[in-house]
Amino acid sequence: MKIGFIGLGNMGGPMAANLAKAGHVVTGFDMANVTIDGVTMAPSGAEAAMGADVVITMLPNGAILRAVANDIIPVMTKGAALVDCSTVDVDSARAVADQASTAGLLSVDAPVSGGVGGAAGGTLTFMAGGSAEAFAKADPLFDIMGQKAVHCGEAGAGQAAKICNNMILGVTMIATCEAFSLADKLGLDRQKMFDVVSTSSGYSWTMNAYCPAPGVGPQSPADNDYQPGFASELMLKDLRLSQQAAQSADADTPMGEAAAALYEQFVENEGGLGTDFSAMLPRFEKRSRS
Image (cartoon, rainbow, N blue to C red; front, side, top):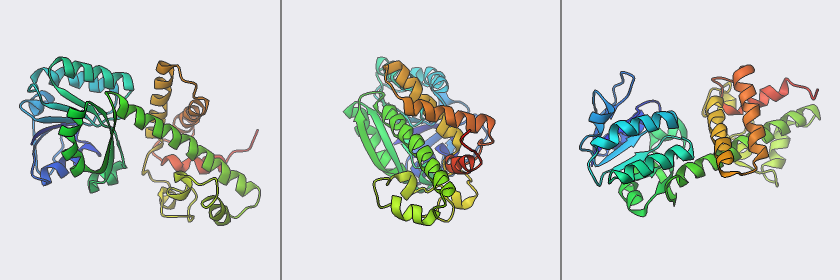
């Protein structure tokens, strides 16, 4: 395929490189002056999108996605697909899908899970929203960039799945960190705590696969001084998106709301910026109940 790729940062760059390595003709654009193996750089997003069979975007937020869509949709070839892999608000995803449909284009909102390592290794998971026809056109590219793609439903369903998943992730990480902090204060050995909880009803991904306690369980960012695998500010972004979606859908999400408030405090006032989201554990260790 002829592919346009807009947004070649830590995630988009390796994703585009994997597509080029697989033999696709990839033309890229990024606001920064970047060089990606196998990718021909264009002077603008519109020029990267012109004549492409598929245009993939990986952008910071919904406002930027809408602005880029305004630039590229008018120059895209009818029948081409716009595949947005950003994590943005559901309303923006649906608005761009409607805009693409009006222009005779296919569209997929397909946020990813797997982080920078997954982008480089081609092991991402894609959560996709859009028509069956649009998903079928994008799916061969998902196979190159990732290990799994789930068609979640119509436009916006991919973003909805990502936001709901990461709301659970944020809430369970806080609960896991609180439990370790409480165990410490009760004199319970962390390894014993892990041995019990990881095989009992407290089992969770944040405990078993991404344990926030250094030296306990599989290797995780906690064993690297909480250098980010998934940064706290990115978790805050996703939790804010969950609350924006909850407000739009009139959904009661008190745990999601509390998690968003805690990560906001951690990132903006307590030095959490630039740390892994599991660094909530040392944050709780330093605090008392009062």
